[in-house]
Image 1 (cartoon, rainbow, N blue to C red):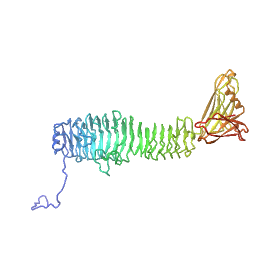
Image 2 (image 1 turned 30 degrees about the horizontal axis):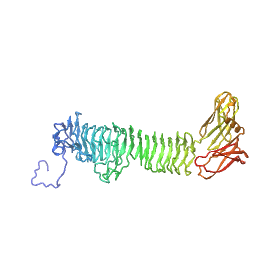
Image 3 (image 1 turned 180 degrees about the vertical axis):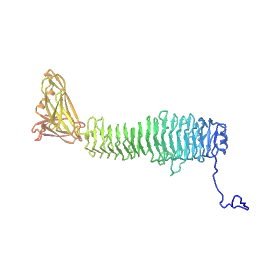
Image 4 (image 1 turned 90 degrees about the vertical axis):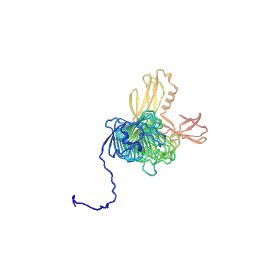
Length: 639
């Protein structure tokens, strides 16, 4: 058979019917307000007419809008929409009907049949942008501006919704002001979308700026919703003061990435959607929210981060980061809050660390915290390890662990409780407060708390001498060196008249004879220079030197008499006791070598009543009493 063969008779179609898509040669169509009606069919809901084929380019030029019976423009074929004149301005004068989203008003829409459409360089003013159940749409370098008009009520002025997927919005500008309190750029049941390099501005009187929501959209149960979206490199700004209806970036869904955005915002910067969004009542049936990453964002103003399952490398200099059943690391913030079971590592916190009463066992590790920490009584099994903390820890919870931390406080204690807490472990930390160090800087009432091996160990120096003497008169000066209430042997540097002398305090006692040669105030300073785990400490006494010997007060005489005996009288620490309990008070009389002095009479005064006791062979004295006075009882001993 060749080209000259002639076939006669009937040819049978043995293949049946064949379905095929027609092919078109793409063409460019110039669309102006005069030609709009030819390409968008007013009789078919504003959909593209038969003059437009898939793959065509619509070149919008000049102002578009106000054409009779063309209140809606619907892209229902995959086309490219551009503006070669760079002056395309679409205004459909949208006015929404209600806040439920059921009547969004005049709109520019792209539906399912319009998938794979590209829109580039178009300016939309007071026009509802509506991407509905569509996919693979690109909005590039567009502007969507709503000003003083009710556009986006309940849905957002630019709304990507109803199971839309793989939508890209990039290099674009969005502005909303006074639109009735609704949001700007909304993803409502949208997945695998990319929102990148956009500027989103709220001018006041608007809702959330970038919002992933389940409100006012039908979301079936057990489906992927608002998930695996990328929100990156966007700039968000709120021009007005903070309001409860306007947040920066709001999340629902799972597996979303919020990365490298800049928010200039007062109020809530990044947060999870409020309420359930499920149609069954606020707070009920909340859709699953998990595996969201918040990273590399910068939040200025007082905005904060309160969302994310992994939160890292964010910069929030004036706001807080709330870590709720999440991991947070390498962030810088003015404060951090912890809720749920969380891990907080390697952050810089230039303020307080607040722990919710509902927090579960969590790890706080290797952070710099320049503020206070409060642990409520309901919180237990928190572990603090290798943190550098400048502030005070209020520890009311039980069963918590602090180890290998560095804590420096300007208060009296580094760690203290306001009420009884139990079974906390404070071990192997560097603890330094304004008045105490090491173990002594921890004040927890219950004996079940373990406080041990904390450094530095404080060395107390007490100088006992007269407050006044006469010139050229020898005055005894006693220096006591104690550590954990025990006399200890250390080298002490004594400074008098700018001259230093190092003397060993044998058994914690130094006795020197000081003879001033000039009148005026004279200082005697005793310094322990510290070593190993023992901290440096110092003490200074001032003696007034007068020219008149008769001016020596009785205090000097008592001091001279005590010093001349070369001894020290002590009272042991008296524990807290109950009313009407029996108590034995102990003390000791020792010489400068630390040896007990036996057989000496001691006068012990308890609340004004004197009693006489005698020291035993070791210099120990004791007095048995019954506590019959409520409150503070005063005890003094005299030799």
